[in-house]
Amino acid sequence: MTRAVVVPVLTIDGPSGSGKGTVSRLVAERLGWRLLDSGALYRAVGYAAGAAGLDLSDVDAVTRCAESTRIRFQPSVDGQDTRVLVNGHDATDELRTETAGAAASAIASIPSVRQALVDLQLGFRKAPGLVADGRDMGTVIFPDAAYKVFLTASAAERAKRRYKQLKEKGLSVTLSGLQREIEARDARDASRAVAPLKPAADAVLVDTTGMPIDEVVANVFAVVRP
Ligand code: DC
Image (cartoon, rainbow, N blue to C red; front, side):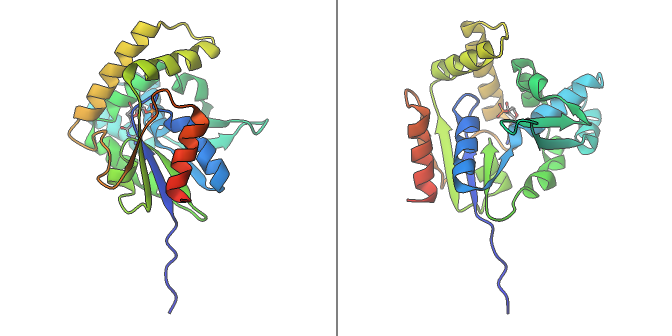
């Protein structure tokens, strides 16, 4: 009799600006595992709904949008970056804005939208392994993951990181405005009824406030390869 091979999963959950995105990418590269950026899926649906002129609180319309939006991840031409194609359009830059984050957070509170994205996320679990970045990776999507990490950092530090990232991209933002937006988004993500932002009971908590990225990566890597 052959035994089914269980593909290992490392879940990295946490609020925006906790370093999840960068850390997940670096750890996935180092392990040679696939990467799921689940936030990009919610951003893509929020973006598609906005582009179609939908009212983001119209549950039926946004759910249909989540069910029908085609989302593809594709390496950039120079291989340095991953582009996100939404219904065939490269929306990577639009998806990174705080507006897209807020739209994602709004539609992510709709249970049927979350349901529409489940199979897509489960499909990322392929050999030799998966690093899954999000809010509910360890609690809802991959509760059986062998390795779970929850990254946190103070709101002030997370705002500073986002500020730096967005400024480097030439976007016009203020630090105080960003901190307010981040705090509002965290409150909404943590208080929603379905899949709220919270650590899985078996997750390793890492507070990244004041911690250089290579140290965060080392901490996360140690969870998988102690
Ligand atoms: O990680 P991010 O900032 O790209 O996520 C954008 C929004 O998407 C976030 O505010 C909440 C939502 N999200 C979610 O509800 N569940 C996930 N697994 C990932 C993101």
